[in-house]
Amino acid sequence: MKVDETYSNMQRIRQILNIFIKHGFGYVIEFLNLDKFLSIGKRFFRLETSKLPEDESRLSIPERLALTLEELGPTFIKFGQIMSTRPDLFPEELVESFKRLQDQVTPFNFSEVKKIIEEEFGKPLESLYKSFEEKPVAAASLSQVHYAVLYTGEEVVVKVQRPDIQKLILTDLRILNKLANFIDKRLGEDRIFEPLLIVAEFDKSIRREMDFITEAANTEKLYNNFKDNTHFRFAKVYWEYTTVRVLTLERFIGFRIDDFEKYKLYNIDRKKIAERIVHAYLKQFFEDGFFHADPHMGNIFIAKDGTILMLDCGMVGYLDNDLKENFSQVFIGIVTHEFDKLVEAYIRLGMMSQPADYEAFKRDLIDFLEKHLDVPINQFKISEVFMDTIKNARKYNIRINIDFLLLMRSLSMLEDVSRILDPEINIIETTKPFALNLLKKKISVKEFIHSIGKVLVDAVDTSRELPKQIRQIFNLLLSGNLRIELKDSAEKKIIDQINSVGNRISMSIIIAGIAIGSSILLQNAHSPTLWGFPLLGIVGYSMAGFIGFFLIISIFRSGKW
Image 1 (tube, rainbow, N blue to C red):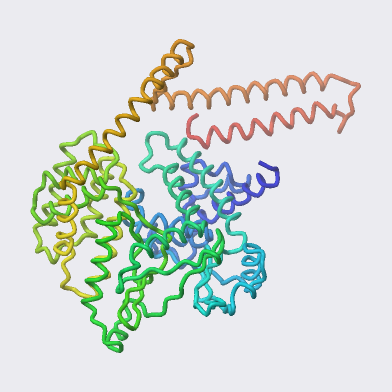
Image 2: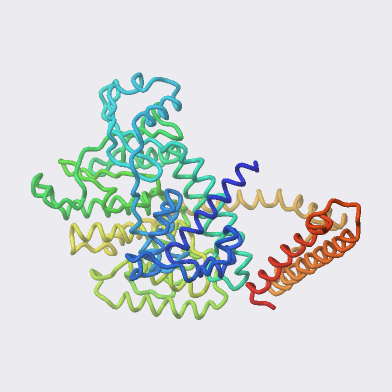
């Protein structure tokens, strides 16, 4: 890494830490030993005594954390927004606080918009679009949206990425990775969350969001899946006007799904809209295995003729055949109250691995399912089941499948949207025919033959690869290069402590060496003098004293003296 990049990163790290301190998180900075990245003056300042701004003194910790992320800028706002979809990684209070994060950003100038578009296509903007509205319709932390018209007369929306946003986010990602590594080592096996996993998940998500080609591909796939549906639509993608930083889509004209006055104005049946939305999503879950994973109110519009218009396909989920089958088993188990099958399906559907205490996990899962299933089916709340599932998984330290999370989150949002339109809608009963149909397909002769074929292909592939892999293991064994890595948390802690002690001993020896050398130089009458004493001896003593002072301070601050 270049020197100027390193300096820039350090300045940004200090800025991040100082903003956390400003909002009352100095004690966290000290506990995690992140104060080593601060300026010398700040390091010896009692961080926990930093006064909160008056308007924050009564706010909860999650609320203050949300304010901190907003002040830190686009990367951290997106971090909070993306992490609000991961209740498996954060406590419920934090997730709720992150959901309220807002993109409070100023639109960038039209001259920048024009420059980016012309850089991407190598043509003047005027040759691409017949007309282009300079004022943006919406502005967010990563991009902003403009209305335009093509030379064919088609009305479009053009999403343009913010200038230099990729550079800023990539810099912040490097810093987040550095801090996550440091925190992970500091907490060791005692950590109650996974900083490296959290940053890795965010890294993957934000890179996807910065690539408009990915969003265009998602949109086109959903568009094709519903091209024959006259009641539920996704936008058409204009690929010749789309790049990594510019996305051009068909413009939808309609009103927000929660603008209830418009239903009366255009004589649209709200219950029919709720039913169509639920059916469209069940098709995505049970038939397509590919779904729009962000169905909140702002992403669903209604045309004057009652057509449902879906926006923003940046977040999608995937369900393979096994996930779809287990998802069906969950819904059938809920309707029939077959708890054993329901628990098994839950584990296969959502969990990457079976918990160590399987029986205890199973008992807890049955207890909370019974609690929810004892209520009338029309009062059954998917969102509550979702959150209890997360709490139970976290209790047993179980990692949850990301597509299962997106599925449950989408269902929860779908439930909220549909019940606002029709309070009497019964999503579980509506789902039953879809689930049964999928299970019937699973046991059909055609599907059985297809499954057998897949198993045979996998077996043949495995039989081809196995001898080669065994030979590789034996070659490593004979050459003495076979390594088996065993992780032991206690051993790691001991090694860390030995390294720490070794570093201090080394520093003490260096200090002693400098002091002894300086004493010898003081006896040298031929060297340059300062105030009557040999200059080199004074410099040596000063260095020894300075290093010794910081060594003593670090020992006292560590609390291990």
